[in-house]
Length: 128
View 1 (cartoon, rainbow, N blue to C red):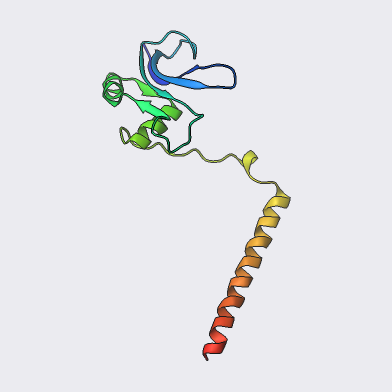
View 2: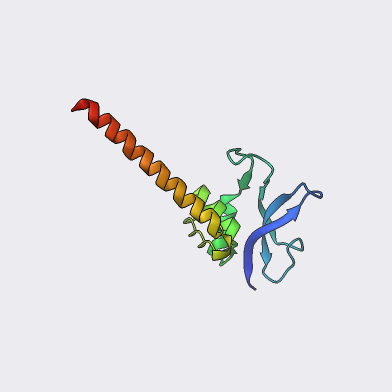
């Protein structure tokens, strides 16, 4: 049986709250699960300690039995120090800024560099 550590959604409409559970890979997202291992509340601030609660002892137990964490849960485990932090995926080309925005960014960088050079030259001139 393929077992995963993943999130199961709970909470009302527009008020998500997730359980971190061990479930059969074939079961539906909010369906039957084997054991609840923690919670995740995305509505809390990112520095709030109650945002992610993990039972690391049970997670390590299930991982030793072959359970594989989902991408999001693997990031939680990496942040908690229970597992190595997974690599971030490469941004797809679709999500890059469009051509006009890229040109605007380049011109702004060039202007900023020119201003910094001018400021550096102005600082050197009186010293001589």
